[in-house]
Image (cartoon, rainbow, N blue to C red; front, side, top):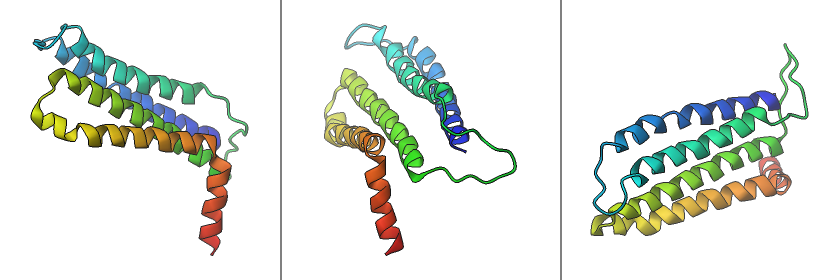
Length: 148
């Protein structure tokens, strides 16, 4: 089951990364008055590349347990927390890159949301890092509150 979950999340990341290809191609037709033209298609391209790399990593990562056909195997809570951790880190990196790419088109309206966008990206990445580094502690905390 753990292998199936890693494979499903990896496949999800790879498919989502394909959404950035049309955006990158579309940006070739946009004139950038604030800087070089190559930066516009590079931003969505690298966002998609980060997501695809995470997906490929999950698809290729070895699982400790093999899937058995015909049985229901519940993965350990720690594994599920780590999968969510990978998701949050990737989402945080993409949100951070999106916010930084918005600096190219800096104006007053956009500057109002700058702080909240960067805070959200940081929170995603921090939460993902905590879930990846301390799954056992969080699983015990969840277990303590779910049985009380």
